[in-house]
Length: 175
Image (cartoon, rainbow, N blue to C red; front, side, top):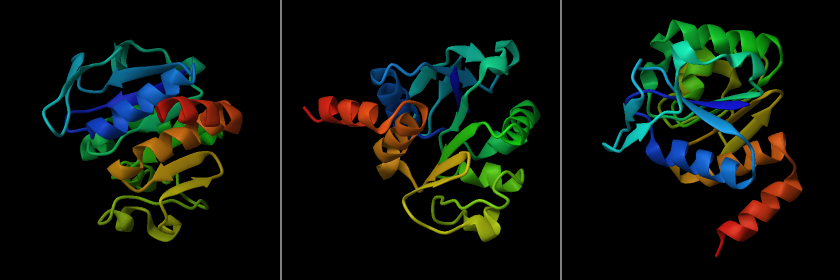
């Protein structure tokens, strides 16, 4: 299973585009609220009901953990941070877009990896920051920002399924 984490202030386009394209590729993704409430309010006042709450989800089957940007307070959620660090220690897949790579940087997950992020958050990535639009490095995928939501999702699809599946979803999404 793949999990996408939602906190108040998340970037709706980054979360919803990723969820939509993964599901079109028949890749299971569960949305998880870290707020303690199922309804999470995005940065542009779009409310989304998460599939589950952080405290109620068993992550033992986690293949990829996905962080949309906007919710810069994700670093304050100790349980999520512990999950991310443990997931990385097991060399499992993690993806983050926009400001969210800053969480990975602060947790030391980007050590010896390359990454990108939204302008202004480079300081949290340190030597890992190389710029770019979408960067895949070892077990981590990062992307610069909202305008790259589809590219981010297609990179995830390629990693979890194949480039053929990503191409099929891309072709059907163009109509």
